Image (cartoon, rainbow, N blue to C red):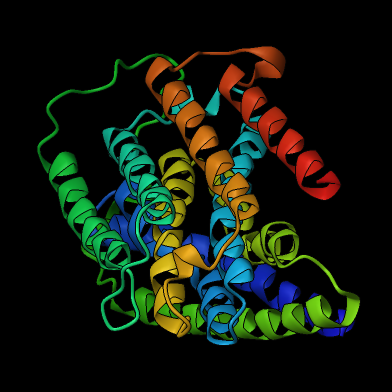
Length: 333
């Protein structure tokens, strides 16, 4: 069982490495830019394995695993930006990767994260067994992506450029003249592999919860969420090493925004009522942590501190501390 879990995790890891290169090519050839492609195409692709986990868990009746896998992944992936900041030595990553698209995506993320909390505290109403908030999450995501494209095409303000600001320009100018079709086909094939790996991970997690009497919330937030978030870690570090800084940040924020849709999918798969009213108060820990870390990240993106402790921003340090304390609280509660 453990061997199967490691193999599935390795498949996720290796597939993700190729996705970053293809996403950068797609950004250049479609002229959509790294931030938008990172937030949509790459963000959705790297989230497929996690989506498979949440839907499979919800379909089997484990609401806590489905919910915690989604919101736990958001916290873990935000942490990855702090780790990426550590390896980017020239300046604070949030300073160098200034982009209006990423600012917009982060505010969209915080807005959508508030909706599950509203659903939890509100009445347990459903439409065909699905809470209305699940429909709102999907509609809000689609509308947000359309608005993000408008922000890129006609920005109302621009970040101040400094010596450390890294502009989003194609590595090879001729890339923008090539067709993106082949890259898109390869990208879709890798997405399907990630989805299959996620299904395997979900089934292994369910067996482990039953066999070892583990907490679904802890397994979801600290095991399946972290394993299925490996694509985000790999693609983020690879993007930073390639100098595609907007792609790195956009991939994380966009992936987090897409991860919220796991809740909608989980609510659809959970046939015993509203997913949001089948969880306990303890499951809200990681939702709160995700909101806090996203808020800290947004502050860092706006302030754009050039350098802080160990050449990283204070926001990266705060995100690491926040996640560490949350893990300590979760395993001891």
